[in-house]
Image 1: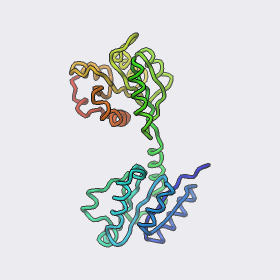
Image 2 (image 1 turned 30 degrees about the vertical axis):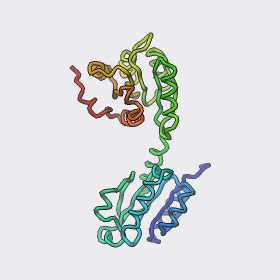
Image 3 (image 1 turned 45 degrees about the vertical axis):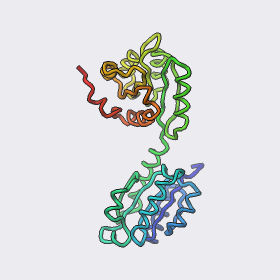
Image 4 (image 1 turned 60 degrees about the horizontal axis):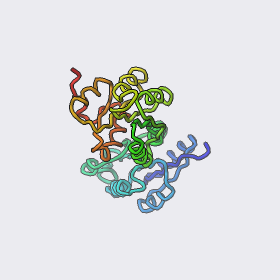
Length: 265
């Protein structure tokens, strides 16, 4: 591995930390460790790929570190695995109930746990963090496409794989590029977005179509749903909903949630 992925372990149980370090390094990860919250904050400058936040005493230290990470604009999106204390030790070095209610992490386990059991979970988190959603932008207006592409370029988890100016062009590019999501206008020359959506859902169902249109009447939502679209966003709401919509339909869910209830009759 040319660039080893970096794991930062923050935990005061020396035996557990050493066992984790040996296990993770055997899997060719680069491992950094500390038992100090203040030192952990300093070590974040090395920009680890994943953080394993274990047990710290007194109780509340791990939660304070968690809060600092989640409020930091540079570090809040780094995958976080929380390892809580053994049940009988939580009042001393674990997460208290009110803290757990505010927990934001990609994974949560509690001790006792063997380091080897953590490896597949870490691999899964890293794969999820580095995966990019491939998006095709379809609109017959160049300025609209440029604006959408500029927004997509700012997202770490999104990759623009192509643009299309009409439904026929979109269908051809979907079959060739197999994007995860196709952002589709409705009214376009040659082939409409609804016709293209119908063909895409039939020929390439792994590509989820998200309709992005200025025609936001209820009947257009019904027709889009019938054609096989997974989401529907009016262009006037695009700035706030676009990225959330892409991530939601990529996960195989309807966006907005109410779109699932749109009549199929």
